[in-house]
Amino acid sequence: MGARLLFRAIIMGPPGSGKGTVSERIVNTFGLKHLSSGELLRTNIKNETEFGLLAKSFIDEGKLVPDDAITKIILHELKQMSQYSWLLDGFPRTLPQAEELHKVFQPDTVINLNVPFETIKKRLTSRWIHPGSGRVYNTDFNPPKVTGLDDLTGEPLIQRNDDKPETVTLRLRAYEELTQPVLEYYRNKGILEVFSGTETNKIWPHVQAFLSKKIPTIS
Image (cartoon, rainbow, N blue to C red):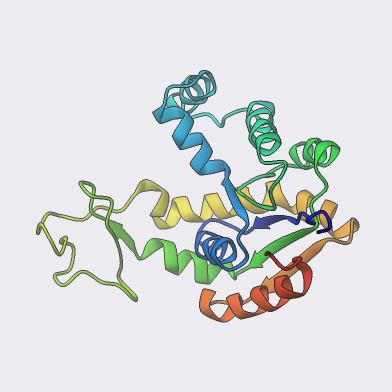
C-alpha cells in the first residue's frame, strides 16, 4: 500500500456565516481532523493550562489574545496532528499568522464562505439564548414557543452582547479589515476557493463537490 496522502484545508468566513455547520459537514463527510481556534482557546481556559491562563488574563481585560500566543498554540496542536488530514477553522485571522503557518504547513486549499453582511446581521441579531443550558433559538427559523421564553424551563431568553445589532456591525467590520489581507495572501498562492450564497444548505453542495475532487479517497 502506498503512503496515504494528507490533505490540509483552512475554512474562513465571518462570524455567523455558517462556518461551524460547514466545518462539521466537511469533517463528517471527509474524515478530516477538526481544529477550531475558538474551541482550543475555550478548552485551554477551562483546563487552566499555561496558555489558558495567559489567554484569560487578556480576555478579562477586554483585549484580544496576542497573535503570537495563538500562533504558538495552534502550531503546537497541528504538530501533534501531523499524520492526519485536517481542517483548520478560525485561524489564521491575520497576515502574520498566515505567514507563520505557511513556514510549517502549506495548506492545500482555503475555503472562504462569502455570505452578505446583511444576511449575517439578520441571522445573528435574531439569535436568542437560554443562559442556563446554552439552548439557542432563532426568531426566524427556530423560534421559542412563547416569545422570549425558553421552551423547557419557561425562563427568559437573553441576547448575547455579541449578537446585538451595533456589536454585530462592529464585529463584521473588524473581521473584514483583519482578514482581507489573509484572503489576498491565499489568492496570490492560488489556493483560495470562494463559495458565495445566503443559505448554508445551498452553499454546502458546492463545497462538497469541490472537496470530493480534491481530497484523496479516505480508506
